[in-house]
Length: 223
Image 1 (cartoon, helix red, strand yellow):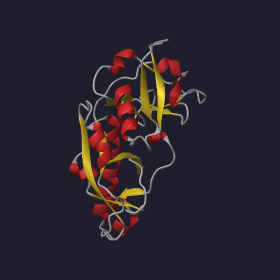
Image 2 (cartoon, one colour):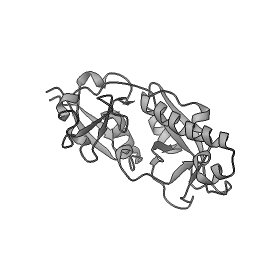
Image 3 (cartoon, helix red, strand yellow):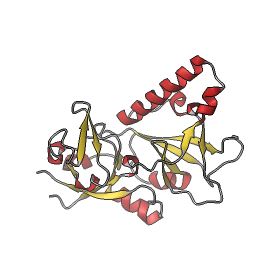
Image 4 (tube, helix red, strand yellow):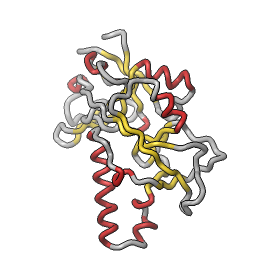
């Protein structure tokens, strides 16, 4: 194995999703809208999810502006939130990330408000983190036979998409060549985790904004 390592943000692979929802995707909004609007909302839900997982840039229509979040400004909010299945980062975290090579990464600004759309519910702005750097993790064979439920990765979609089992992300082995490039990236075959360089992970920890990322260390090498 290589002496180097990669850090994996496992939060997106967990079941604890914050109660964050774009207003146009909620039942209250849909109840007051036409059938055409509801169809558009449902289509945007699917389009946005697929675009993010592919590592493509989300459009303004897919992101929206106002999202509902049930925290309050006086409460502590993690620097990284698994918001409705998307990675949301605070303004402070964004400033730390921007000190590193982010390649093709987009920060989509959001307004996190209460359901009345009048009260901000975070003490600072948050952004939807849209990582568009795509690299192959590599050693899929090291993760067990496709479809084996005991393997660290469960295979879905005929080998197109793999879903990591929670708590098993540390068993992944990343090919050395996957480290070449920006400090944060995704593998479209493993869309529910983010890969971070050792330098970036250290930077987040030093700045005290690593809480919420669920960082685990993965080995670099080949088998």
